[in-house]
Amino acid sequence: MSEREGEKPGWFDRPGNVNKLWYGLLILCGALVVSEFFYAHHPHFAIERIPGFFAIFGFVAFVLIVFAGKALRNVIMRDESYYDRD
Image 1 (tube, helix red, strand yellow):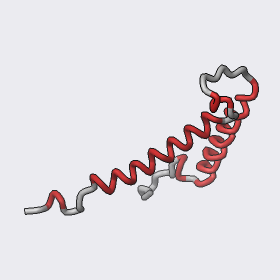
Image 2 (image 1 turned 90 degrees about the vertical axis):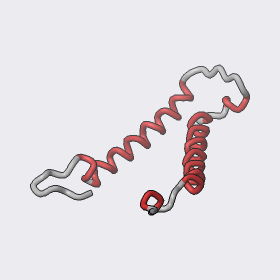
Image 3 (image 1 turned 60 degrees about the horizontal axis):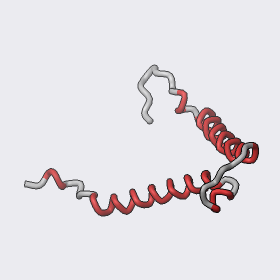
Image 4 (image 1 turned 60 degrees about the vertical axis):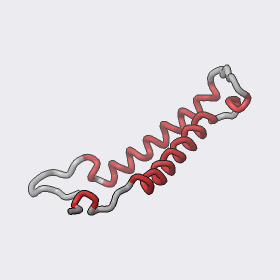
């Protein structure tokens, strides 16, 4: 990102703060998976009995959405000069 003259860098412009945010998110996700062991589950399906199932399911769904978006980009993307044609 370009900085304007005399302007202080933002909170996300400092690499140390980005690392703190990343590690904080990892700790939070890990704590949420561990918390599954401390309450009673009432699964509707057998696969829901797997510890961390919803975390794994959410991650896989997110990855599939990203790949679907990449594939869709190839289908609907226009040339750079699409609107400049005469």
